[in-house]
Image (tube, rainbow, N blue to C red; front, side):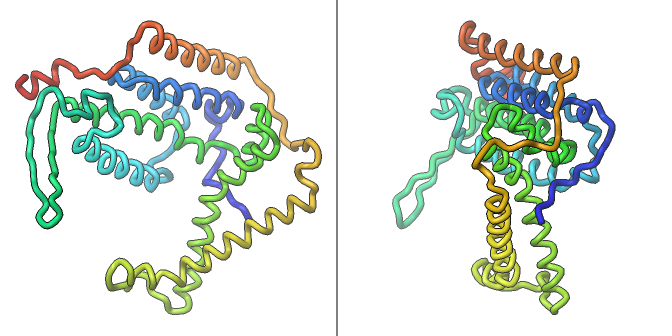
Length: 294
């Protein structure tokens, strides 16, 4: 059986909005953010996203695991990677030009490779810029899992103009991860009841992966069987032969129209600022340069 994320009614302003208006707002902010390298613009979008997140009234207890994963990903992987390599950044960051803080070069014995590291002020600012960008996306989309009614997944995308097949695929995609997590938890409990102790796994990486087979194999097979059950159920209902109807009805209210109008203005304004006025390129604050003695 397919399940969903831990959704519950909260009687908040976010949940009172039409789900289509919410998705239009999320997509408008996302496409606005990816146009800018300037930290000042990204901080504006981060503040806007944070306001949206606070209106969702989520607690730390229910989002702790998600935020732990996000913070590790953002700070450790994205932050350190951009400081060291600068990849994904503009030209002045990639080439290491600018204000050099530290430079080192090592030669790998036996293979003749040369590792050349350059730490610049530009790379540090770029790492901060990328972390703010990723945190903005996280703050925007984390509330979706906890405040979006699972019964509205399919009908929302259908009413946004997507075909039935795409809308239903999006519905299944949103339910896949929590369903897989539920199956893994049930399998783990079942194996523990049979004396299998995951905590006592030992050996190297390959050995530990091999010993995880009693968990991985049943979960994988169950996911395949579950997918076949869903396909058979859809075939029995002649899915795809003609346009289908949806049980839920969605209706816009004045606040939904206001949010859609704001989203459209935000996106159009961002495009005009970036394309016509050429504003939003990579920016290094003067205070940061003075902080490092430049």
